[in-house]
Image (cartoon, rainbow, N blue to C red):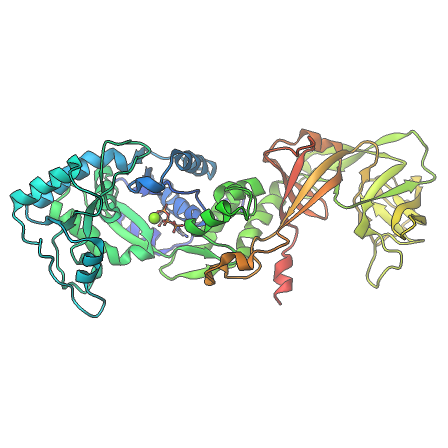
Length: 555
Ligand code: ATP
Ligand code: MG
């Protein structure tokens, strides 16, 4: 997958764009339109990969446009994080815009709608508007203010802008059809009064455009050709088209809807992600367990794996829940190819090699990537005292346990064959030291006489290792559909983080840069965290295990 020689699968949007480009000559223009009211999540990645990816593929352009029409919920912090995330995913926008750049134009278009008799100022309050709207089975009723004169509407709308009315006192509405079977067409609101400070326009405005009004006009202003959005906007398309047709905008983008991404064992709604952060269930938006792009980055998910995932799941018109294992497998494949191998002992027990000279340290060659010799070698130090994983020793070995046990010989990866001769326990019966002898003829882990060992284990030199902290992350939720219950916290996985404070890593890890990925041999893929531990230790986050351990659990 890293050598990208596969042709992209033909989903319906790709086919549609291709067909449109064959019919007419134009530059494909798309946009990714996030609202800056939270951090982006894996669902947004699907939209980013689609919008930016398809523009790239057909020599078009994609804008990043912030849909900033809800001043109370939006913030500059989110703007900056979204820009960073899009770039990190590997995309560059053609232009960076804000819907708030268009406030004056949007206002002028609203004046035009009033002037042609297609919009009116309505004095009904929110409850009354709802009541007049009707239901799916009953038509709505005309507002008593529907037939105001154009002059009166112009005057009232200008006074709305001038701040003469209270919030909720008046709205501007489109004049369409209160009996339309599509409720979105029953004179939807276009502008509401809000005395809120906007993160870009400050207090310049006290009326703000509604999403449905601002979005289509913003698309038209930017010359977007294909406006790709999620399925919940399908019923809004007639309104999108009505506004642009009525205003006779020079450009009329085609809105096309696709299914949202939903992943099992995850939530992808900003409201729920806010809840996790605000109630301290996680350690911020970039907690490595979060499905945010910032969290996935800190967890060590490579951007190429996320892009690959978005391509693999495809684009359809049908909502479905994707197995999070598919995403994890994309991460494994990418890291298997690119992550250098190192040794790190997570749960150490000491081994003393009795016949190895005291005060001697030797450097042993270790391959950085067994499947890719071109990635070279490094050296790892070896001496009389080493650490191995507690799990790699059993005093009374179970059937099929081929690792170290009393009297048994195993291979120390890249080093020697060792045989366990004795164990030392503390007064509670805990093994505190394992004694072994080694065979000097087996240097490099090679057998001198054809003698075979069944187990190979990793290790770390006791005196020449780096003491690091490892955070073993697991899924944040332990049920497949946490959003099914109103209280998502009920299905939080209590074991989603295990901190291993005393792990011994080979010294080459001292050079690890934050964000750099490794395979800890036999354990999984790990990445150096963006911050060090309080005690100055380097911290490594578990990105993903070597194999899918959840798949087995669910069988
Ligand atoms: P949320 O419901 O989480 O608040 P949203 O749709 O309100 O998400 P926006 O910031 O408006 O978030 O989304 C920006 C773009 O990303 C929109 O075009 C939206 O359709 C798309 N998007 C959001 N969530 C998903 C998802 N789960 N799958 C695919 N696209 C998504
Ligand atoms: Mg939205």
